[in-house]
Amino acid sequence: MSVCDSIKSLKPYQGGKPISELQRELGLDHVVKLASNENPLGIGQKTLEAMQQAVSEVDRYPDGNGFELKQAIGNHLDVSTDAIILGNGSNDILELIARAYVCQSTDEVIFSEYAFVVYPLVTQALGAQAMVTKSKDFGHDLEAMLLAITDNTKLIFIANPNNPTGTLLSDDEIHAFLSRVPNSITVVLDQAYFEYLDDKDVAIKWLKEFDHLIITRTFSKAYGLAGLRVGYSVSSSKIADYINRIRQPFNVNHIAQVAAVSALSDQSHLVRSVIANKNGLKQLASGFDKLGLSYIPSSANFISVKVADSAKLYKQLLELGFIVRPVEMKNYLRVSIGTSREISDFLDALKSVL
Image 1 (tube, helix red, strand yellow):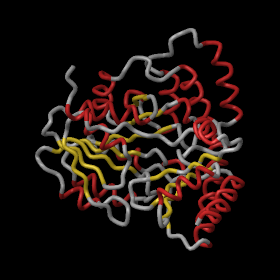
Image 2 (cartoon, one colour):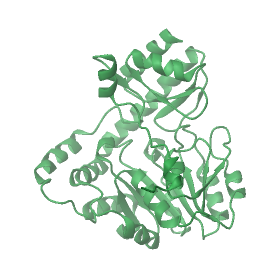
Image 3 (cartoon, one colour):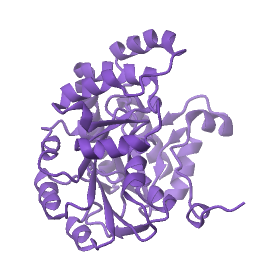
Image 4 (cartoon, helix red, strand yellow):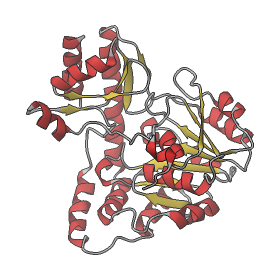
């Protein structure tokens, strides 16, 4: 049986270790997971009630076009519904975009060092060429990315805020970058953590100016729906039409659609989540400062902290019941924002093993 060479050498995406897995391995009763950038407040009560009502309807296929959810997103962002594509998480959207625009083995995809791991995964899976630019202060070096453009460049990925570093590019920097990228090259602005910025939504307005721009967002982070897998993209209607042609039918399940509509309308829960995240960032940063550890200032819902031996420390923390995330930066661990109590307990555990 023949398999593509690009698939043979591909390492599958590894998510944060599940709580149940660690409990089985070590026999622990209490585990704190700070590895997957989940919302520690969970979902709002309004959304929970909407999901409970939707359970009785799962014998029917979901709305394959996601009419109500697209309407809710369109009203929220003031965009036309024909500009919106729904996905099984924003990861689904990222893969669809790559499949739509990367067609040959000579096609090139540009992304930054220390950027979201899905970018190299989808590039390699398609047998395309990954053009990885060096990071600048752990974030995107936009000038280097512009210099990496060739006649073969088809796609550029930018995560802002970036994962796993939490670094943030200004709106002015990104706008200037988009102005210099040829219209023939599609640019994906991955804003999975946008809601945590608590800032004006400037990027959506750029869609009227840049036909080659796609913005992706998710309900997995600030909205607390990680387990339901629902994300979306906003672009020109032309781009959306192309992506929709290769989208799997019914790719967003019924309960996920209902929950996302409800979550979008529950702004009070979103505000509480953003405030809790800001407080958690300060608590973690203060704890690292007291322990004499350096870290990358973050605009997302996690912080990457530098330690002497990340592999050893990761295992020691697991034994104490704390799951964090090893990342590609040497001797860095990424720590998601948890509840105040979870962060306090984690910092105590960290202090005990340092």
